[in-house]
Length: 118
Figure 1 (cartoon, rainbow, N blue to C red):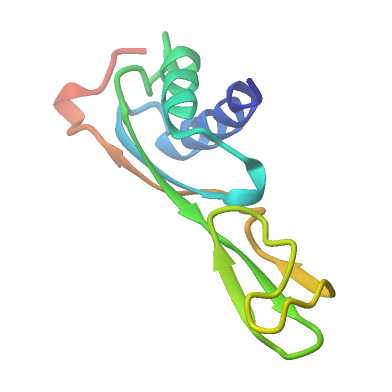
Figure 2 (tube, rainbow, N blue to C red):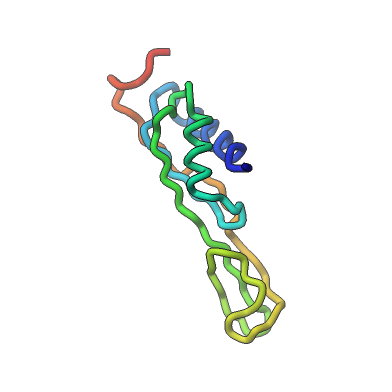
């Protein structure tokens, strides 16, 4: 379950941003090429967040598609899975871009009165 490693990276980034305040929500962008299962990611995030300022935080995950471009006809294809042939001409010479993102877009902090004591 590689989602645990991804969750560790995201939580580390969120903790750096939060500066000791409790985080109630984290929004992340994850590219389709990471092959992340949303339920597994939510479970990994909750597990790794235990005992940190992100414990109990909601995770909002935005899936970023990869784009394949056919070198023969120029058709651009965005699909939830990797595309092996062009949907326009059937060609097999495709270039792949994007879909490899892993970015913590934003965090929502608890009001100061709800922050954990250090």
